[in-house]
Length: 386
Image 1 (cartoon, rainbow, N blue to C red):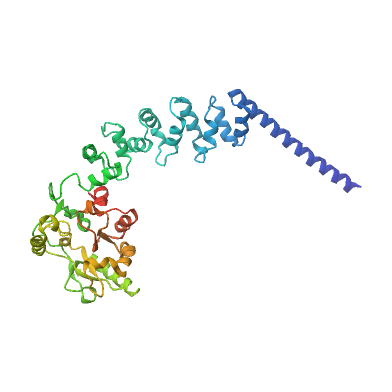
Image 2 (image 1 turned 180 degrees about the horizontal axis):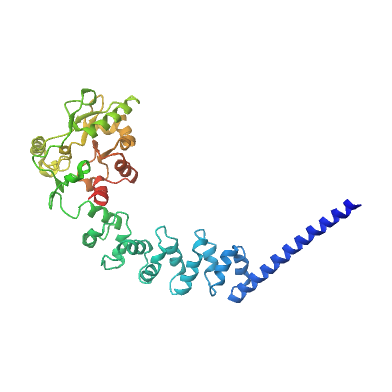
């Protein structure tokens, strides 16, 4: 009998607890419902807002009615930690499309301390990426803002020091995309090849850029040149030691796949390049020779980090593209620090025809970046190394 009474008592206590919980929820629901209703939200809006957390509702209670709130909280990009900012700035700036403010606040490079500056520019310009980058990086650079400068600024490889050059080039080539304007100016294509040339910056050591705008002195000879042994070269060749060591690793790994990669030529002296280039000119003329051969002093081979490659059959350069060795190099050279220096479809940047056989050592990190982003060394150098 006592056990039965105890069981009934426990059931009653449990029911009482359930009733208290239900009553509490009803009170809270009515409280939330009444509060939202007083602010101005209709029944359908309240039904959606009630799905939010207590913390989110407490934030909403602090503000006046926001006609865009339902769209904000139901967006897949909604971030509850930024609800205060959504509410504050969409209400204070109801003359701006709420989506623009919403997207500014959600931007990956958004900085809360800069939000007022973002909003100020957003009232004049419809370019969120450009505004974010300008405020974060160039606010104090005295850049005169307009739609063109903002479109240029937002591009990945934009360099503030080149802004005037970008604008000048854009005025002459308005048919080009802004990304292409940046690429061309960064690669000095707003100048003619072999004009306004500068001495290559040798302080960059193995990252030194040599091309049709940057040259080496006639007497320049790199340090640490080593002879390439017969196993890795078709003829006598030399490379700077770090390039040679990594080429050996690459060639050895290729051999595991039954592929043979050999060097036909590595380092070339100024005088050697002079003879080579002048012979080409005699045959094809200056204009044609310049598409496939460097003028003396402007040859990357003089640096000692570049090599022309072939396979076991010693195929001609023009046939190297059709070899298994080329296919392997295309996918693997960057793992050893080498890049294809003059890639296909980039001739207008490098100034040279596509050369499937010409590789340059720049280190694994840089080579991997260039490979993954499909850019030239000219572009990488301008943005990261110059």
